[in-house]
Image (cartoon, rainbow, N blue to C red; front, side, top):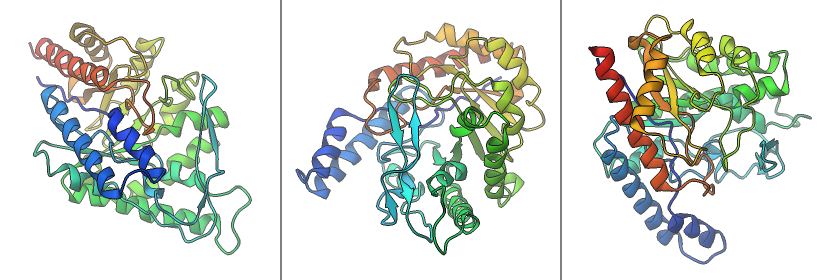
Length: 353
């Protein structure tokens, strides 16, 4: 029986594009020249995705500044001194801070689909950022005349629009919820995690059951410059809340877990009904390229705990969630994707036999 296999989203940007973004910011090239580099990067990414045999492809997030900040790009009511996200290796990323209401998305993910569709007719998925991640830009001391609840109402509306536009464009949608384990790290009582889940369900509840089958949620402990931000958090602290989310698909980092069978046993409890769990079988922050047989064995391991009708495969995380991350090469990323596709097919042939 065939097993579905899908990427998470981001692919490392070509050096020419990264340099072009830097030149444009410094006034060294015109907008038209930067657009030409974006278009070339998207076209090359889609062609290379198709060459891997992947049944579902993405544009590699080539046009996004990062997986989390794309809806904020160009907004005028932001300051640069928002929440700091520390990674295990010591480097940090910083979110912007909202300075005034009302909150509106400055860009929607469907715009990336529109440009990508010029270069492919293959089935596509589009990653969108979670409402809970966007909520982190609201300042802790509030904003005069714009309450946190008013802000959250705006976030929910904009997040619903972001997803609906992608569905209407014919894509499946993946909500990036990489702050899930981080929420447990920041608040071990799970209060923050449950608040995040409740907020995201305010978004998901506005879609039909049929729509929810085309929507998935991705969780991982972060992946930037070959480092994570919350890998030490036990999945047992995350999964009960994660699977309260009203989505049909879940993309779960797994290949880099120290005790995969233990996590798979936990996941097996939630692999019910029409819910499909895509387990990570390749590790984007490990330079070593997995073999197809290694992927096959990881899939067969997962099938001991998750029935094949509820099972799929994916990569643990995106390969370059932040646009300037050059820690992984494009060649490595696509080699890992090809191994995932081929290894999943090998496992499917055995499970179908």
